[in-house]
Image (cartoon, rainbow, N blue to C red; front, side, top):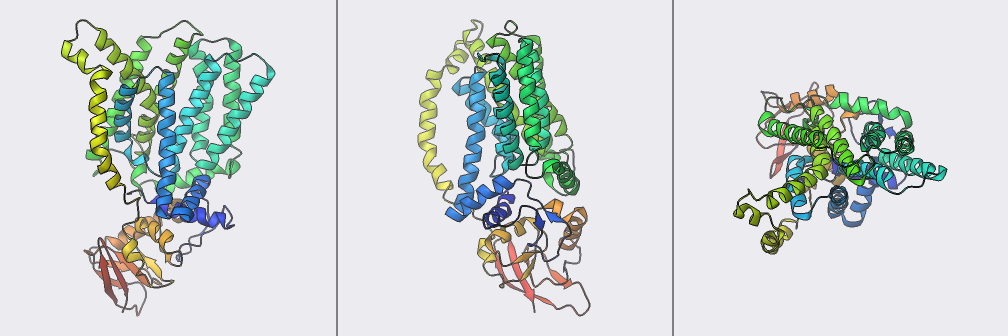
Length: 465
């Protein structure tokens, strides 16, 4: 696993179950950063903590796997409502997963994506299902939407922004579907309930302050908050940005040209749901030009619509007499079923072999050698694993950007990448750094010299002489 956040998030969840307050002064860093530590995904952290308490690192993988299945299951459920068929859905899933690969990880963001699609599916039900025109239907829609909003706020603070967008998308969905006014009112009621519920999360309205703290501290420091136009990232992320924008734009143009079904019909409702999902995807894709993290949101939101459009296209190609016989044969399920079955039979043993390691940190071997209770200096990614594997050790800085701020991350990079060697901060009593880097000195007068005592894989352990 290359995603490091779940390690320190599991540590937070373990402490939460032992009675630690939600918002608290930081106790993991020996640098003593000012302000409170406020977890951005408290419910998810608690789930990771339960998983780790039960199965160790495999428990983190299990919880993460459940989160991924929740998203893909919801996406395929929505795709089926839009008329998608299995094989085109598989192709769309593979493409979306490749484009959004960093988001397909044991983080709360993948479950938030599932809730986004689930909320839009709820809106589709309110628009197209035989719902009675009664006061309790409005009350029920408000209550269910408020519960979804509240749960999302506990899963991740980003839901506060997402829920406002979805709250506006639900009545828009009803208007696009051309349904009666009372159904538009029903969808609006659900949208209001969603927004209100999201304001009843763990941080109430102060969540907006936390969101600003996270974004401002992460800007320019964390890859997911950088632009795909950033030097060094263009080769990896600019093609993703172009492809997501191109797919979303092409599908949007096709939907606008081919509005289907009579107003209020099930077919018009499907069209309206597709338009709403594509609109959300395009907004996220445009935001992805500023911050890479939104490209994943765009791809994962587009998946159900892409699956439905691929299904419709293959049906047209297969029935078009102008298509070649070879193409029509290749587009039939009977052709693909034995091939896919054979591929699964051949690759499943390899997949199980690769899954023998459920994401144990690569630092495990050397972290066990850290002196008891030492103050470790290392990069933020490694520190996240240290926090879980060695609770007795305090770190200099980890990936919680809102706790440390931009200046602390810049200082860490300066120390690790100094041209004359690594400079260890004062009061550090051990260090984990790449073997290629030389420790020259530490801060403070009369600072001790440092010696390397062990090297394992990509890290070396240094202690004062």
